[in-house]
Image (cartoon, rainbow, N blue to C red; front, side):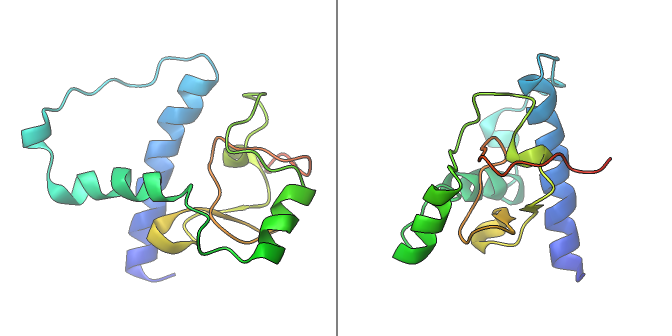
Length: 121
């Protein structure tokens, strides 16, 4: 793993842990930062995350594969989401988005599909 991918993985892991804690009913650590104080490098991951729902570059056949496994961008069960699934591939898509071993295109860590399988601890 090169340095750039390592840093993306670490940054995503930190952000995901807060989301998972909040999704599980816990209190995520609160940080107060004024927009003017946030460096551009820290603002970039948030902008990239918004692009992770863009499927415009995904081929029609790959979109059908996503549909066949019942992928949704927001899980109805907080205990079963892409963030804790064995098949999620962290940072493998453009803009540092996550991917899935079962289909192509970006994956939301809060998403889910009928092939969800709990990640080994």
